Length: 215
Image (cartoon, rainbow, N blue to C red; front, side, top):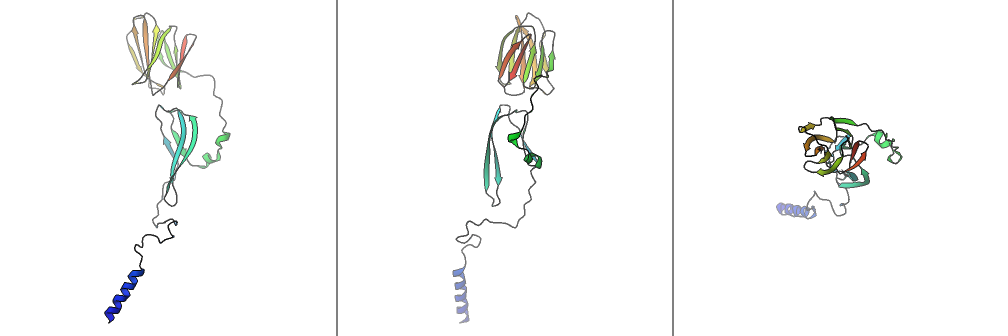
């Protein structure tokens, strides 16, 4: 008799038990789950993102973050600003950055005087650079100029009857130029300027010089 009573008692408990105690009851779905496990993340100081040499305009910045309930959300800030791919893009979080107001940022006027650095000097031609500009000083007429790829380089042909040995110079200084080659042909000499990345360019002529603006 006692065994029968115990069997009935156990059956009654199983009828009221939850199917899976690890899942919430009906009506509890909107309650965020928590855990006793403490995860300490390293505070953000500064992260840097490098762009390829083809980048010219930063259209937007997207940040992906995790909420308290563990959900992942993305937030995008539309920008549309020109960028210099030589410089990294930073994301940081500190008091100094937060106190500044981007809309009231005053841009300093750029000096109209350019500081060219000479990278090649020859008797009949001098090549200098200033950031994204290349200046070629010569009395010789520029016959043609064009762009070649793999690697990206500007080719310039100047009119002059000259007999010189082929010259090649690697530019070690911080410059948009990586390498310069000079060689003579029948009635002209050729200057090949290898660039440090992908560019388009515009050329302007002034007295005894040609200025190439890299875009």
